[in-house]
Amino acid sequence: MKKLIYVFIIMSVFVISMTSCKTNDAVGDGTETPPANTVYIYDNFFQPATLTVSSPNTIITWVNKGSSNHTVTVGSPNASGELSGVLQEKFNSGTLAPGLSFSHTFQWEGNWNYYCQIHPQMRAEIKVKF
Picture 1 (cartoon, rainbow, N blue to C red):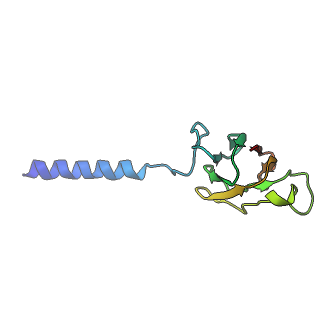
Picture 2: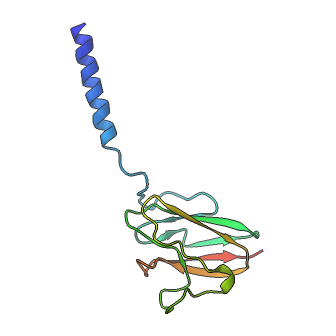
């Protein structure tokens, strides 16, 4: 009976130590392929960098898989003042902490460049063609 208790204690310690080593699921390394109509935000890039939408009213969801805060902002980082881009498709996620997501419904055809306001070197594009 003492051996059984001893084994139970050792197994419990092992299980507890393994679960405490778990990493943050929100953080990815960029090797994971996002599902359809989804863009993953990593700490230096968007994946995919170009996403094509072929039907109206398609919802695209961005998921922050990085370890830093990011934004999804239509236009380019060189534009001053308001968001650049055609009026119909202006969007800005605001700050997305790791693990958070943002969605936008695309209703108009066009090529929509976007970037991260916190890291303006991060740029990507949504192509909408019906």
